[in-house]
Figure 1 (spheres, rainbow over the protein chains, first blue to last red):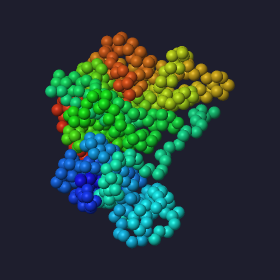
Figure 2 (cartoon, each protein chain N blue to C red):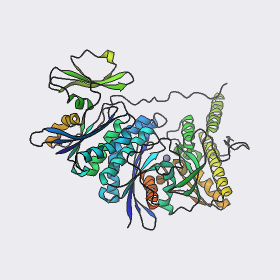
Figure 3 (cartoon, rainbow over the protein chains, first blue to last red):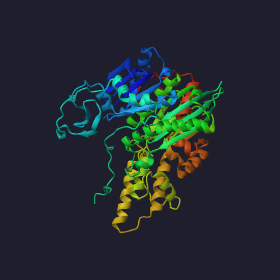
Figure 4 (cartoon, each protein chain N blue to C red):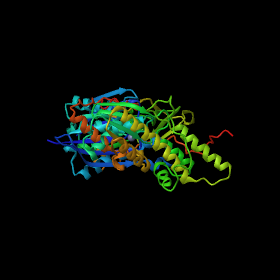
Length: 205
Length: 348
Ligand SMILES: [Zn+2]
């Protein structure tokens, strides 16, 4: 089956097409388009999707499923990826599966020791989650100052997920054929907004 | 053969999806107008919080589109073109609508038009009152805009004649409402209170009406301050605030300046049609005073019904239909939203 991978939770605008064998679950990346520019999520994502699908020798109508990173991500562009996945799902009639972006990064980890995935949360903070040696998430995702974290045995320094990683992280759900979970963003932070206090007087006297 | 145009709006705190039918004779028929508003989430902040609005747009976009198609009894495959608000508006909010529109256009294989939100407020009038005579004058008044526009061609040529130099008219309503301890947004409660008040009770200033002021620009910051000073002085004297009279006198000042300048601009340019649109267009005193003054000046006044005046997807679909009918080239799929899109750019 043909799965479209999308993520805009990092500064990358990521789109790719991955073929997944329904029987064995083997996943193979066919084409991808990635641009590192946090301001270009809204501009480039759909063109990247079309180009990646075209490079894979297909059209959008051939897609069987979508896997979409839902953060955590510090950029307003996180929503560009998610709404693109939701609108494609609606108009193509295919399911869209949410993926924690840190899990998608973790899916590319070399086997070995337990590890931590860190991404830039801006404002001098990081998003992080801890995984066991098999890549199962044990803790997180959280947002914290780096100095507040306990040391980790191994830290993955990938700054963004690959299309293959995104699909790997969604693969169990995709192959189960189950109804996808809703595409709910992992914001981890509340919006910056303060309720007005008492009004300032304008009179000087 | 008629064509179906889908319109997507997300420039501020309303997620809107509209569907219209563009007939061969150029008339545009409204089929669906679904809106999800986040206004209640902003109430406790006393104004629109961009991040809160953006989060709400993401949640509401596809469900609102689904409702629009269900209401119209149409399938997605019936759509012939998509229009989306490219600006002006809040950057993060615009991004959600623009991204969704690109995905819909790519999936459906139809042309996409990034269009101007302000022009949409004018185009929406054609859904109710039919083709707009050219030239026409438009007065846009809402929480975000206060503009006088000359419309030579709704699909291509719109020129700004004047705008506010500080607060938008609707913003002044919100601030005065807060001062009078009335709820947000301020327009409806002030309008309601004003009905029981005396509009001549307090002589609030008419901003930008001096001999040396720009003739078609507006200013509401001084008026807001004048109301605040008056209320504070009354409080200092230990008097109870006559909320109804303050609301009526404030509203009179706003309606007076807006209609006087709009009618003068139309008269001086020999324009015979005035459209008033935007959220504040629903204000009862603004529309009654405009009707009175337009009639005296021999100007046709067109005010879309309140539901069409506030931000919605139907206005963007209507504008999209006019842009399609005019044969304009579609936008490239890599365009970006422009929070400061000038009104002279009707479509990208
Ligand atoms: Zn508006």
